[in-house]
Length: 119
Image 1 (cartoon, helix red, strand yellow):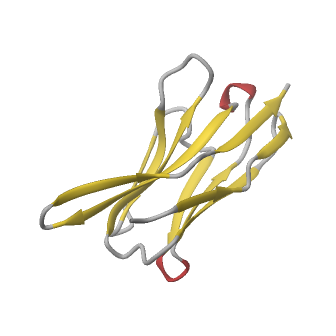
Image 2: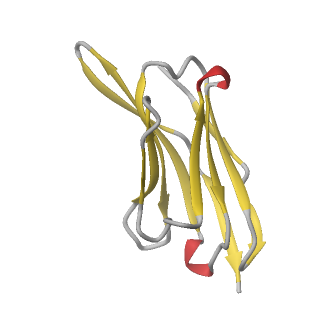
């Protein structure tokens, strides 16, 4: 089992920045993909950004040019730097990690951290 603990959320004005962190309870070397999702009230959960173990990244169109995902395996942590925040970025942001093992892939989720962007 793995625990993922997010931090860094909060209230920020439009145009501001936040840096989210997701710390895993053990080594992330076996996690083939780590990512950030978000869920706003009455909306489906959506992928914001992901990063593979080799370092390749993927971003939602809404995040491109504003958000940057990074990963520090030595600290078992994945980050999401969010700049130029907009009110529509308001949501609970959840960390996800997919661990590959010969028996199959297991997906882990954190509890989430609230991001609120005021206009």
